[in-house]
Image (tube, rainbow, N blue to C red; front, side, top):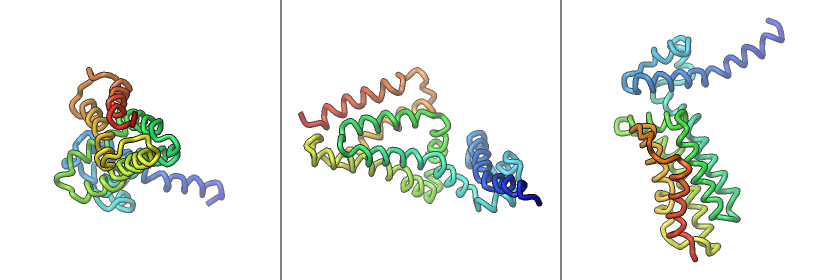
Length: 207
């Protein structure tokens, strides 16, 4: 084997988990998680079933991989925005809401939460993993930002856990209406987000 051939093989091996997850997302979306088989994912990825199991030992592991790749970075981005914007909690909360709304309205990003919602009642471990890696991270970012705003005299001193849920909940509902219920006649995401912020700040921001 020549030196030039080695990096090419390495790139292919390193790309395989992403190729498998791409195939899994397509298969799970088309067939539904329950009906899909690992053999279907292998066929879509043009790999053997054994090759799938080298990286993911079950369908649930594939779904956890999708959560980690597709959705956990969204929560991490919101957390990073909160950390970077503690000096101006109100402006940062606005940025978080607008960013979250934009990301949740991306059909590819929301494809994984949609799958998780469909299987959560039957796969408690997947639901717990999603909650820990995505929901808790996003809510924690808003909670920390709210506590900073309370300390700065910007926000009212109300329950920060409740604030996190009240901030993020309407964004998720809008995304579900669009991607799950097919409500394409809803107002644009930015219109919803800005109306949400106006109402939120009316009650949360100290005058």
